[in-house]
Length: 129
Image 1 (cartoon, rainbow, N blue to C red):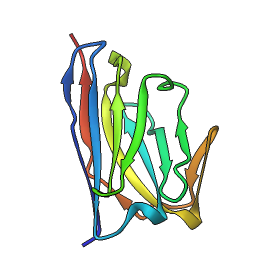
Image 2: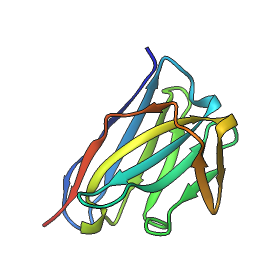
Image 3: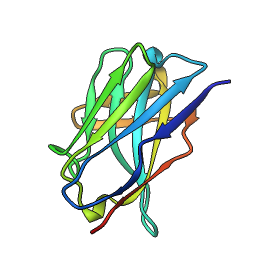
Image 4: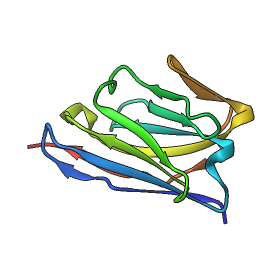
């Protein structure tokens, strides 16, 4: 069964760090773009970061540049989002999604897809003192 499973969320104080994981099973990430989204209560979903499974191209939203790092472990078929210097405004449910390379684009200034083939269940990140 193909699925994405996120983990690593939690409660952290401002300035703290968390590492989110997005583990894929039933398919290999080599042929997909993995996109991290987040959605805070009452706000629209926001794209945070992307990584291309084929060539490793990366994208970061301006709101997280310099603080978040996306990476991939090929052996574990897992994508990570290392989040440092967290702020209260980073509080949201974080989701990862996978889009077939043929339906997605990743670059320094862009990340998007016509459709996403798989979504994770989400993991809550709360930044509060």
